[in-house]
Image 1: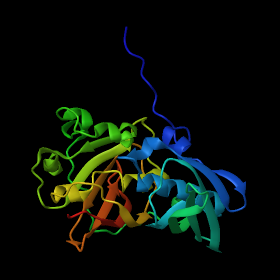
Image 2: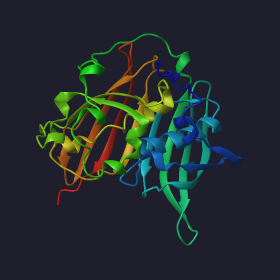
Image 3: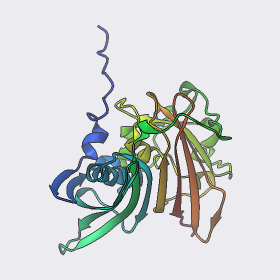
Image 4: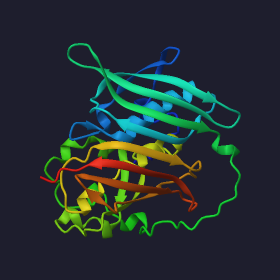
Length: 285
């Protein structure tokens, strides 16, 4: 008897959608529950958090597609209840701008701000088709030649502390995973195929996750440990075509215990659909 084939999850009906859902309590105030499924070593992934806030802003603003989203990460989020406060800054015919904060409560019941976001939204489907670019898609081998968690040796210590890995389809370019064998290249490069494990196609919100879902480039520089995000800005350039996307992340400068990560996301039609830059802290001691 052959195994049943599970149909891919649809946009709007996947684990990612459920776990980034927000519920309107009052104008500009949303309740949400941060899922432990998007954590690594107990830390909630920054791209997932950005998608939660972006969903609330999409409900607040008259335009629903994020064009540019800038977030400052003020304190570490933890799984559990949270609130998102949104405010409309400006609305226009083609663009609208809003700001938002994601907050949780400490043991004494006091509000603690986790993220503050400023974002501009529009309509990606209304953009002209004209493209003039010198950017080229990353040279990532076919998915079958790339490496995922099941393609390596025995799971590394702490692998059970990375539940986010179970929710992603992540296949790394073999030329950028030398760090996993104790042989980092020192170039500060990571490239991979990215998708959601349940087969849900990419959309503008999931692109906010894609830019922050790969192993940190610090690993390829020979630096281990947690690399917390200080600031992350994402530009969504186009609605992605169906299928997995390719993500390329590079770091050119590490100084004073901080590095930048520049990411590009390319869809199945070789279009640059998202770009980002983030500043992150690294432990050098």
